[in-house]
Image 1 (spheres, rainbow, N blue to C red):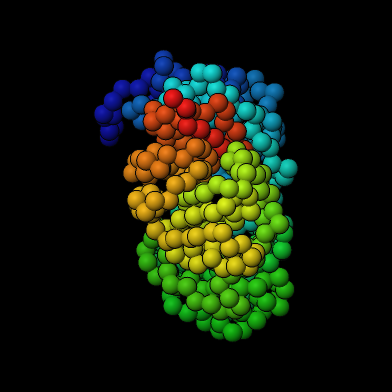
Image 2: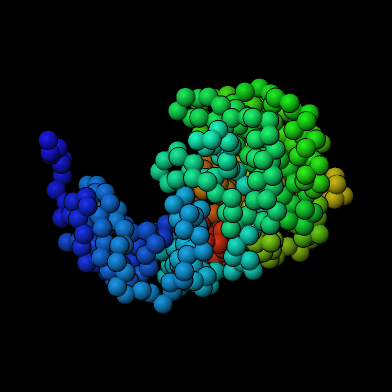
Length: 463
């Protein structure tokens, strides 16, 4: 029986057509059109031509696959790892690295254009990573059970919950993939079963590894569908013996039916809930639930851009919203009179205070709470910042925070962004309120992916 489609499209599923890739979406998908109807094509580059198979159709767009590439782009390179295309960990790996950088610069320029902010302003070339592979200092890996009843590490096939076996992710710091394989082998010796999401059964859900780029210290987090780890002492001693740089082993007891990996209670199995790494000349303690930038050397470049934009002379009061464990805050404090940091995660604030003490930095004040609320309270209490630094999550800034910042009337606002679209939206509001900017500096924190960071300095326009 044929099911009648609710809408008409110029192509149907399983049709093929000869197409040209006209553009790329912000996620790096090629765009081919049939009678104006867009088909998004993975692993395709602008200007490429060939036969495209229609994989699925929707009301406004469909998805396709290039099954016969007749004209390749000069920006195309051989795939480093075909499995990564299946699981989506390296969606831009078919592009030369220079093309990836240009693509990210264009994403930022397009975002500014969308909000009418592009005229007379410069988007600089993207700051490249020195290492386009083997850069991630954190791995969060689902664990499955194969047909032989053995645990294996892998990653979810795109748009599914099937775990494809992966042992070399190509983008983790050296030593992380090997550590995962070692721990999986140890857990297998104890006949433990991987988590089955469908039946909410099995014990081992995920392995999370965090590693210090400069210190080589490693934290292991074992996420279980339960409240304990059988033969815990033996397993812990075997991990520590096999991986001497492990300084912390945590158990996350996550018995919820949820996709949030570390939503359970934490227990220390070995060491303490922290490991150390460095950034610039400062040492940071990082807990299992604290945010720390994934690509340490690129984070140093990003923060250096933010510090340079702030251009501190030593007598300023600075507010660092979304201060985390203090990575930007403490660097700013070395050049400012006083820095106020606010962060919603209480554990991160505790780490930030520890890190200030550890580095003998005393001109900082950290507070736990939502940036938009605390910012308003500080302004009411008479805090008059010369500079406000913001590094929000992907959703960007809350309107209440923007209004509180405008009310605080700082000379400069340094916006560090991981999402050009929400950044441009927020910057437009500051521009409307009397601030302006002349340039945006993109930076590549996540090579082989479509993500891009950027830094914008906004200054108050003197009337």
